[in-house]
Image (cartoon, rainbow, N blue to C red; front, side, top):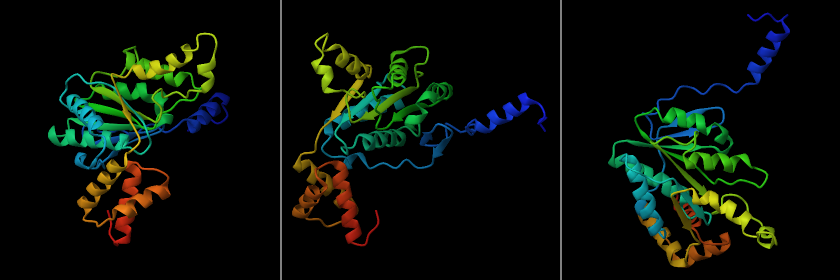
Length: 275
């Protein structure tokens, strides 16, 4: 027992209580996916992702992402990826589905590691662990965005991507989803600056340029929205009506893959079914 009469011992005990718990030991070869948080990491026994065939209206984006993830799984040269653009258009689902497809073809040669944004300061430690594993990893940062006051986050991301001393190892690639192409918030005032008006904008866009693959996702056309619903409804044996589907999107305030899936959930609920 620590001598409680010793001031240094009391300070050490207090610091130990304040310190976050050590992350438990993880078998990085056993699971299809992992979640890496600030204080812990856990294995995910089942990677939940839709079939690639069900992801409609993003054919070009799908081809590029699937090809790149397959290269990584095979141990070939592959890009870090930035998937940016409209909400609910399948950016995260496409990454999960691509990894799942590669796992099936290459017997678990690749795993997905989703990193919480608050755990970004610990990402270098994660790279150190993953770099020693005989497996490939796609490290996934979902819905990433930095505010103007956050100067360290963008700098760290540049370092990880550019091959600095903290860069991710060869068996690891980064995949980031963001609603903004620049990842960092931009303001109209940047356009109006009379002194080098492009400098601030270009500096922020330069972060996106560090990704070998930058893929935009755009608003869903009506035909694509209906095609997505048709694919899911057919997969789950659900009846649906075009007019009702369009009315659903109007009530939701827009069309997207997410809104289409929510409509399919509504159909299943009406039919007394589970998904």
